[in-house]
Image (cartoon, rainbow, N blue to C red; front, side, top):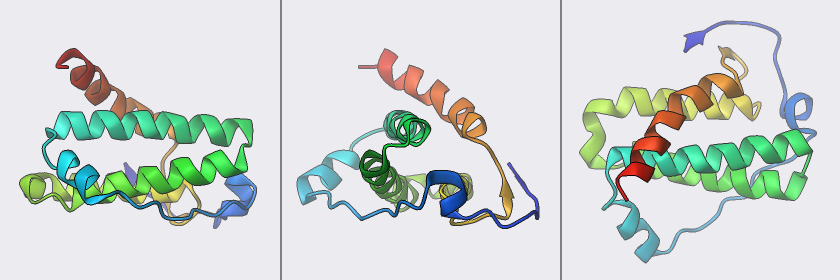
Length: 130
């Protein structure tokens, strides 16, 4: 993923002005999340990303809000997971790229397809190891 300066894209431009409202995972959810492997976590992120992308494409404001909030929450849980310190830079870039797609970081040049192609192999691995 490359950094590239270009015209400032706003959330309004991309998603019609929706805003994300944070969700709250329970302590049990967070504890369960921390037992998953990196592939399982990224596989779940892939699923939520596809949900986010689909809701954006359909112009579903409330569902987009929910999917984006959930996506950001689980990405942050993965970034903050102490087991993945060696991958922290990679995970931070993923978080930045998702924020870019929501219009929060317009200086990146990344597309929905870029992120999906990065995440989908993890979803396949996670599904195959159920």
